[in-house]
Figure: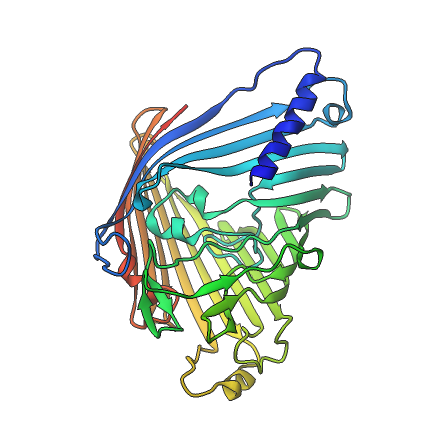
Length: 426
């Protein structure tokens, strides 16, 4: 991170030095205080009564490159966003999170290039990611941070092309960044090595792929509009961003298996609202036949969604996700005594309701996950009040639940919380 930071500063210095007239960029951002109180006290984690207590200062700016140089002629823009964080949950003195530092420019009228640290996202799902393998922070998601922090930055090169037939996005990520998953310090979770829900006593670890040329990640999206409907094709070659496979059971090690993913999506007007369909086929490159009990099988995922503006500042959204573990009979045959047996199918339904009040200064939001196959779910409810143009107060609850401790939401049921955030923007 420091290397990227200083390279970016050097680039900025070079172009500023070559400028005929130096204009300082405008800075924006916010200061925020956040607190998350545990509804269900958890003695397994560091603090049983809360899982978030932090102060955050974010600064961001965009700086058009000045001067008589090639990057300036290509409309080059340097973007920076960084967070200074005092996270009192861990009794730290402070930390810095570089969210964005990238240079964007357009060598031709049909090409855009962005290089450096950036937030990457694509796909049609609402909190459900089929063809988006860019890193996510699920710890932030469960403790009540702003939705901005669900997506983590990637150090990447993104090239976008806009020929007549089809638009093209190509992303190259040299160094793998995994999802941030619960590790027991702040959020308890199910650990298959210990056979139960664990906290700070978890000793498992996930081994990242080494920084090598053969471990680079590639993502490709082809998309175009058909009247008012957008269609897209996706390809990803890299690693599963969540550790689902076992590297060394004796030493409690997981790893991120190699993965090829192929997908497609459609999104457009449907039944007086907006409909979307998205599918993805995940091919496990290290276990293509599904007969290695230690490595996650290939998967098939299908998402169908619908959203509609009901009038009077009321919006609703519905989604259905279908997942199937492929080569399931081979997977079952490979299991040994003591192994956990994961289901072949998973069905997940989501519902989103958003309502605005008081001249759109108050927003009530409800998002609900429910899996009839896993018999678990996750309720996210919030209320945001724009006190003034600068001040915003947000409070809400996170309620994961489930009958079985091994399911996605069931393992998180000890992490219920109520949170409040007060933000001043400038």
